[in-house]
Length: 593
Image 1: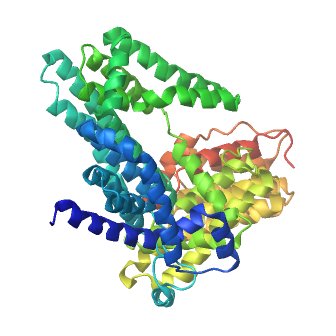
Image 2: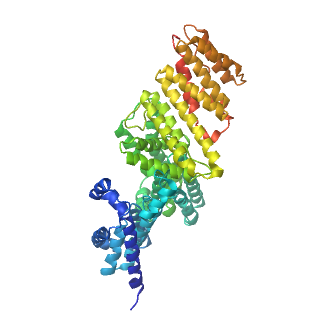
Image 3: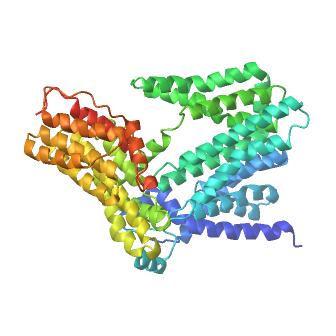
């Protein structure tokens, strides 16, 4: 007799076997150290390893045999249990353990005590494996001929990547809107005031979700941004699933025994806000927060971050006072987000991803560079993304004055030039590998973006050399900055660079050269007060004296003067801060040589 189970179970087995077969290479690379070592010494681009598929399938059968009683009990507990099983299976599949789905399907085929329950475990595992293949897996999925064709088309450096970012961005936004949808659909037994408070809290959570998504675009390296987006989407989705199921109900029962309403909301808001506030104030005062204290503050905040979990529980399990407490928590978290919570996270992610390029393993560095070239530039012909270059330039400028945040090697001083050197090497790859393959109608856009990026790197290199008191090299580098800015049509930047040249020539004792540089500077008349102040400082350095006054030049004034120059979206906005600081450094000297 043909039944649904007799048809669906072999189908799930076949699909799970194919997914496991395809993902074996990644499993070997990520999980089995012996195979990983073998691949390092003898690379194999595509290995289908049927024997390993059978081994992983047998391992999955053993896991399914051990878990089947628990899965059956959860499945018979109701919809919430089935949703929990499916969510865990999907998460494990996305994590790269989709072979468990093959084992569960084979177990249901051989020992079918309750196959329909196991489908909620096997099918999501397989779906997670497919999702990983499409949006997270390594790029080496092709056979040898496909790789040869790709190398002929893109060269040996550029590597392919999956266009996963839009998928995970939409998934994260949809998960962030789930509490709002639940608040609209639920709450029939609540009072109008409770429903209004819950809706307002869900709106604040949606605002935070959108804000966080927009802020994630500040991560310059798109592959690092992909990991952040995928992790955030999965975390939000998992939170919604747990909040809607028995875990959320248990948490609601526990919460209802404590303070709710206004008192409970103020308590939750204080519990979430005070750890962040203490860490932030300590950092702003220039003091180092001990690592255990930072970890403790993070652990305290995790369940309350954004008010997401509290709003989800209040939406799926409404109780008196929950909505008001969730509203106060969400309002506090929105306020701290506006005050700067998490603002530096994209920068830290950028620095961590950038250190991968400085690894001792040249194959890893080439792999990272090839993915970046494809994902950030070649896949975006109309708007090439060179934010990584600008982040590296800023990293160099900050490290030059001792800020080595995010760099495990703590490269400061002249060692900070490694970041500028890396940016230049990446731009060389853009010119040699990407430009010949770039669409002709967009090549001018790429040249303009690369020119602005080169100017930023040159500016960063000049700041590093000036901080290191390498006056002769710094003077030549500021000359390169002035030339590049002149060619780009940035007269305000050019004038500042020439003012720096005059001041540094005075410090080198080359008074005649400084006088000629100042004459050229004086011919560039400008009505902008901050630029006239730069010229005045150069003149004061040339005329001599025991000391120079503090420069009336601020980062805000420089940013305003540079704002109207062409290529605003392509320029870095850190240059005004660092330029004002370096001008103060070279002019606030007791003795001018």
